[in-house]
Length: 112
Length: 114
Image (cartoon, rainbow over all chains, first blue to last red; front, top):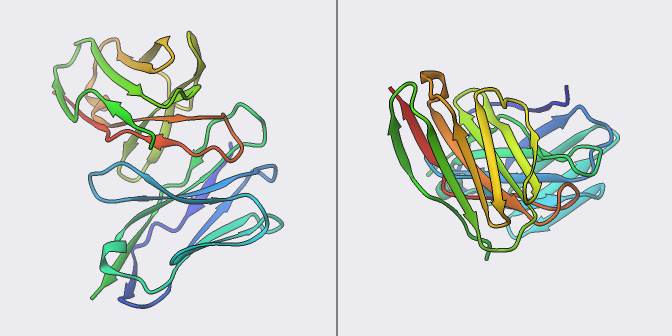
């Protein structure tokens, strides 16, 4: 059974701090990795995706991928109260034609 | 911008009823998905479709069926609703199946079965 693991949290950080969200996956053949944000009662919205080892930056968000360690993370710089949400990590399978597998999500709380 | 529209935001049905959840996307995406989301269990894939009239079972297909007669529309059917099917149902679409192709979600349907 292919698995995607996230710490459920809650992760609490003060406003302006860096929030670090982590995700590990079991399928060594996985190729693409996605981060979604989900506000309470809303549907998930895509933040960014990454498929190469290293870092990928988009505004205040940085995704980091280490395929050897089967680890992907999301850093949020200058965290704002509006970043308070659940963050979902999703991983594609190792074969074409497979659907994304989601972690259960990490709840982030940013206090002002 | 991709728009995925689910026909109902909230739905209340009785045990044993046949329930239809409808989803429409406007970006000519090949692939469409139905997930359910429950506290502590995360997002679980029910069914997905990679082409008209084609479907694949996900992780939890029992008690559900799907229909895809047109490319833009993907329906989830609960043949005989039960209380354990009370959940948030999320429809999504994607351009490709797999690599580097993100899912775009609808607003969700919160179904309560009494």
